Amino acid sequence: MDNEVVPVYTLDEALNHVGFGKFQILVLIYAGLGLVAEAMEIMILSFIGPAIKSEWNLSPAQETLLTSVVFAGLLVGSYSWGFISDNYGRSLLINRVSSCSAEEVNHKCDFIEWKGLLGIAMLASVAGLLSAFSLNYLSLVTLRGLVGIGLGSGPVCLSWFLEFIPASNRGMLMVVISTFWTLGTIFEAALAWMVMPRLNWRWLLALSSVPSFAVLLLYGLAPETPKYLCTAGNMADAAHVLEKMAQRNRTNLPSGMLVSDETATPDEEVIIPEHTPLLSSTVNKSGSSSFLMLLSSELIRTTLLLWFLFFGNSFVYYGVILLTSELNSEEARCGSTLLLLEHAQDASLYVNVFITSLAELPGLLLSAVIVDRVGRKISMAIMSILTFIFLLPLLIHQPVTLTTVLLFGARMFANGTFAVACVYAPEVYPTSLRATGAGIASAVGRIGGMVCPLVSVGLVTGCHQTAAIFLLAVVIVLSIVCILLFPFETKGKRID
Image 1: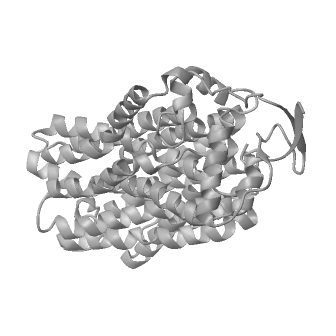
Image 2: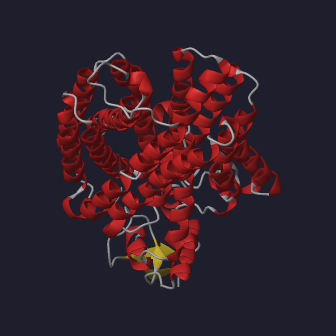
């Protein structure tokens, strides 16, 4: 008998059948650990800048550069890691099928792959640790820039996790993973609270690199996503990963054979010629072609809107954080209308940052509750409007307590908007461009983080609080317009 009729199932059917269980929980923890590492390395900038400025007699511009160089590294890293992920695999392990011929799949090729992997992966961890031993300002700036490049893998963590979960609860779970970022900010504030008053900034840098080393040590346990393997034509390995998922979750896969989503529809059967190999095409794009595909006629509207949304979200999110610090700083004295905590002790600074970091938790909870009910676009619009409402009263000077409450609410909803945007970005792109598209959007957001200290903080320290708040409000309004203009709602949709 030359042919046999075999029932088939698609990847989305398999994910829905396997469901969410222990396998995805382990994936969630690993991807979340990457976000914790990124959040801690970024939040540390709020604590070490003033200490280093005092110790090394830095100018305000030099202090600002310590922050900007990390965001510049994140900008480069976000695109680079996204491109690597889309071309060589989501798990950040170089895909053997893409990089080696069938004859070259051996120990030597594996060694070359791991050597390249470790060289990239150690940027954030090793550079983060070495920065604690910086001898001068130049070496510190260089090492922090390398840390930023290594941390640019954050969008890849989100895309990687996204491709393991079923569509029915994808939005809620993508918001849940964003909680790890908030946990990272809380951990860093608590660590600074314990370390800085007793030791110094070098100890804080060293201890903050621990999560990055944990991510590095667990690299070998990270599986490739079946979605990427299907796109690369490696159906056998995709089926093998799905079998592991089903085994770990104590469920079963649908009967039949896995095929790509374009090959079959539900309950369809396919005739497989005997000894016919499965698809063997691979994803292989240059960086320039990937970028041009994002600006193709089908995607340019979504891409440009997404870029501005991430720029605006980063600008507002970091603006609110920095505004909280500046309005509660003795350096922001602007006369009788000053909004500050009089005679604040060093320890109280860390307490205040710790408390305001907790504002993100209820914002994430609200996001998780509504994102799969009302959709991504409406969720982002609602929380952007609430951010605007909380910031608006600060156009005029308010009492200290009211100012703190308003900034608490603004940070809560700004982070909620950011979390849903991070859900929407990888969903809206096809698999072959998912990490690249989300990575570039995140990179554009980093520009917002770089620009924000120069603009909003400069206005506040120059006693122009009203202008700073007005600028944030304008950016929020423009972001809302972008949200309403998005052509797609991805709630419950197949991610391709």
